[in-house]
Image (cartoon, rainbow, N blue to C red; front, side):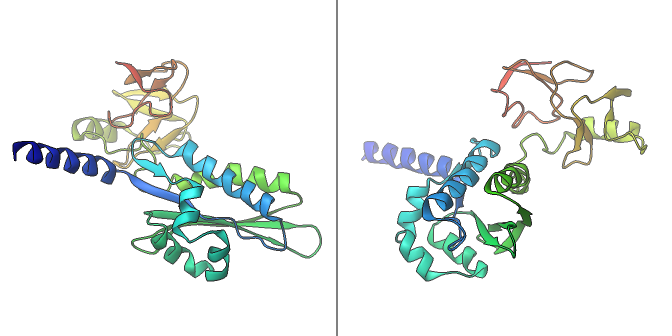
Length: 250
């Protein structure tokens, strides 16, 4: 009886760990008549590769294509079942994921090719990101995908690990010393000192302008990452997640 109780606790804990992660899937690319199945699979794999690269593994699981296809009853069944973009969310439900994305391709008059990227929150049916762009060649489409799709995935709540809520004591101090000048995008205040941000800056969810990670400490760094990069994150959660983790705190 006692053994069964402990086993139950272990199972519950394991479920809680996996439930804490959000699942993301990329549907097979749509572009019949524009590209052959092998080319469409390549584009699908590329979009999935981007998702794996930009989404923090601590918070997100990118579902493998083989699993997605199996849950949808096979690639042929998927293509027959739904052609409209409004059905993407429904396919996301069948794939049992939290977020669903898809690339579709068309050919305009002449030689122009277009790519449409859509990303949805399955539970709310909300459109998180969408773009339509065109290129003269498949290489041009790849350039567009590699440039624009990462921005889409980073719009998923919690996908930007360093843009977390800052502690009130730090935030209030920085907020008081910030200035609204044309150069504020490349300079921020830290501990009442104006600091240059060599790699630019971003505004975190607390409303503070924070330097992006850089190779040297320009002032106000909070941590050294394992690859030698300096982080200016105002929250310990997710700090240095794209740089091998935290080597030491400053």
